[in-house]
Amino acid sequence: MTWLLVIAGAAVGAPLRYLTDRAVQARHSSRFPWGTFAVNVVASLVLGVVTGAVAAGAASDSLTLLLGPGLCGALSTYSTFSYETLLLVEEGALLLAAANVAGSVLATFAAAAAGVGIAELWWG
Image 1 (tube, rainbow, N blue to C red):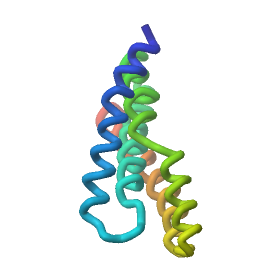
Image 2 (image 1 turned 135 degrees about the horizontal axis):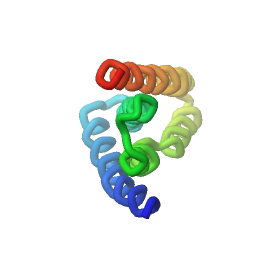
Image 3 (image 1 turned 30 degrees about the vertical axis):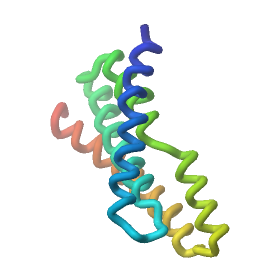
């Protein structure tokens, strides 16, 4: 049963990632991968809230599987982040590549920490 929860979350997360990435990227003419950046930050925020809810005893194992490895696992994308960063390097956009790496690491960490903080406020 646990793997079905992960599959169900992923079935929502994967198309949500694709659609969000395309919608965000379509609004920017920059080579910077804003769509991937956005989905990774949102997934980190949601996972932070889930983690905080688990710590507070407010999330069941089923909900954790559905939202954690299911939804957030499919919503976030380390492989696309890596690929897009490599493309920026190959195009000679080293500053954008460095900004993508540093910005992604800092923003996703901050989002996860904010998510845990939000959960602590809700379920403290």
